[in-house]
Length: 282
Image 1 (spheres, rainbow, N blue to C red):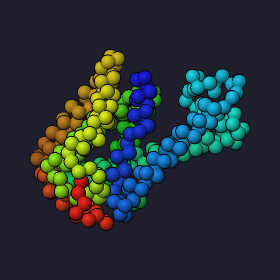
Image 2: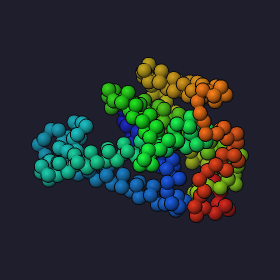
Image 3: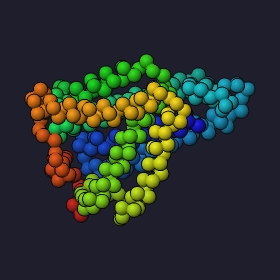
Image 4: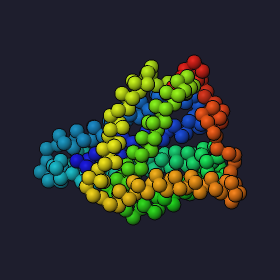
């Protein structure tokens, strides 16, 4: 159950990463909900349909018994269902999907680092773009981290990413609730269709509980490596924030500006919300 919950959460996370590309999208208020809905339909279909075919097949191949499924079994399902060319198609489709997810995640992370540099949280070098107009330093930073983790097995990487992502999600949920409480009339490209703070809390209750369950799993099973990473991530984050503040004061690094001191100053820096009317609030 622990591996199942981790892999399930890993397959469902990072939908919020699309928001970091909002500045590159025309009319995000209209486009983002439609894109997320279509993506959800495609993701569900890409999982459910092949699984139904694989589970429903009658064959003497023991590898296709669902209890014996392993990584790569869907290619065997394709071979049994339609022959060699279907197997090749499954493998090529899986490769294209992985490449797409990888480039999307890299782009989201790189643009997020660039946005933090524009806001003054990171050094100005993260704002540098290549001749192809891509955030070069952010992409290089992501590549270094990926190469450092490339020797780890899949389940270990999933556990690590889930732990860090759960912490990030909890911060996002708390920030959403705080903004809804302190700034109920805050303009947004898309309005969450809930009218009260209590309804927002009810909406986020199960996701928050699920995040806490995943964070507790390493402590329950005594996984010291994962526990160390979960504790080290926020500690290093706070330490890096303090170090960057010292570098800013002493001029060791160049920053585009001082970080915003409040929500109003932060909103003044945001990309204009094309097609967003000010009467629609978060």
